[in-house]
Amino acid sequence: METTSPTLSRKAQIDQTATALFRRRGYAATSMRELAAALGIEAGSIYSHIKSKEELLHRICFRVADEFMAGLRAANADADAPAATHLRRAIESHVRVLINDVDASAVFLHEWRHLSEPALSEFVQLQRGYEAAFRDMIARGVADGALRTPDPAFATLTLFASLTWLPNWYRPDGKLSPDQIAERLTSQLLYGLAVPDGPAI
Amino acid sequence: METTSPTLSRKAQIDQTATALFRRRGYAATSMRELAAALGIEAGSIYSHIKSKEELLHRICFRVADEFMAGLRAANADADAPAATHLRRAIESHVRVLINDVDASAVFLHEWRHLSEPALSEFVQLQRGYEAAFRDMIARGVADGALRTPDPAFATLTLFASLTWLPNWYRPDGKLSPDQIAERLTSQLLYGLAVPDGPAI
DNA sequence: AAAGTTTGCTAACGAACGTTAGGAACCAGT
DNA sequence: ACTGGTTCCTAACGTTCGTTAGCAAACTTT
Image (cartoon, rainbow over all chains, first blue to last red):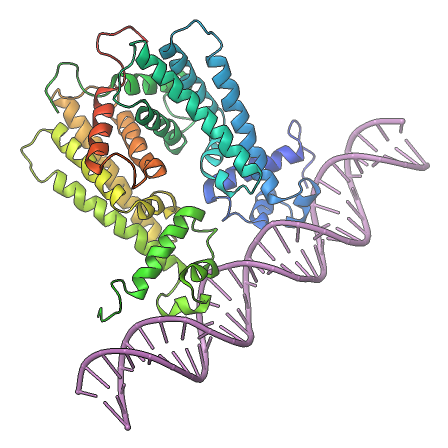
C-alpha cells in the first residue's frame, strides 16, 4: 500500500482520476468500479471521500465554469479598450483555461448534460451568459467598425466551435505554446484563410 | 423484402427512434427499455428486429460516414477545378449531409467511441482519411496561391471545429437554408471577421 | 497513551442493465 | 387451409450498476 500522497489529498486524486476516465470513456460509461481500479482500491472505498458519482461530475463542471467566468471578467476589466481587444483577450483566456486542464475542460464541454436538476439548469444558465458575452463583444466590434460579419450570432457560433474543438486535438507535448495557439486561433478567425484581393473562391 | 406497412419499416422506425435518443441522452445512458418505451413496445420485442444495441449505433455511424464520403468524392470529381473550389464544394456537401439528418450526424460525431473493435478501428480510419482530404485541399489551395495560412493542419482543425459544431445549434425551423449556412460558413472561414485594412486588433 | 481522522476492506442491498426463450397473434402469398 | 414472415408479449437469465453498513488498520493530534 502506498503512503499518503505528498501534495494531493486522496479526494483530489479521486477527482483527477475521475476526470481522466470521464473524459476518455464518458461519464455514463464509467463505472465506480472502474474508477476504483484506476485508483488501486475497491469501489466501496471511494464513498469514504465522496457522496455520489454525480458529485464528481458536478465538481469538475463547476470548477471549470468558474475559471472561464473569471477569465472573462479579467478580459473585460479594462473598460476603455475597444471591443475587438476585449474579444482577443477573452479568446486568449479561454484557450489558457482549456489548456491548463484539458481533461477537465473536455468533461466540462461534453459531459455536463448528465448533471441532474437543479445543477443542470444552473450550469446551462452560466453557459448562456458566457456565450452572450462573446456575442456582445463581436457585436460591439462590428458596431465600432473593427469587425465585419453578416451575422454576429453566427460568427459567435463559429468562434465557439473552434474553441470547443481544441481539447479534441491539443496535446500538451505539441509544438505550440498556449499563447501561440491563442494567437493563431484568433488570427485565423479574425482574418480568415483567403488571400486579400486574391482570386475569387 | 420491404413488404411492410406504412412508409417506414419497423426496423427503420427503431433506427430513427434510437438515433433521436442516442443523440439526446447519449448512447451509454440510453437503455433498451427507454428505447422500447419510446416505440410503445416492450424491451424484449426490439430483439425481433435487431441483434444488439451496438448494432444500432454501428448502423447509424457507418451510414452517415458513407454519406460524408460520397459527398467528398463528388466535390472532388471535377479534377480540373482549383483546390479552393474543391474545398468550397466539400464544405457545402458536408453541411448538407449534416443538415439532412441532424440527429444521426450528432450521433456520428459524438457517440462513435462506444463502438467496439473491430468496428471502432475501421471507423477511425475512415475519419482520418476524410480529414486528410480536407487538409490536402487546404494545402493545395495554399500552394496555388488562393489561400493563406501559417499552418494548413491548424486551419483544418478550425474548419472541422466549425463543421462539427453545427448540429449543436442548427434547428430545422431556423431562418437559414442549408445552402445559406454552407455559404456563410465558407465565407466566414475563408475571409474571417476582421475588416480588410481596418484597425489592428 | 488516548482520541480522532483518514483510508481502506468485505459483503451485500435493490435496482437496472442487455439479452434470450418460447409462445402467440397477425398478415401475405400459395 | 397452409406456410412463412413480421411483430410483440411475458418471464426470466446472469451481470453489472451505484451505494451502504460495519469494521479495522494507519496516521495525526492531543
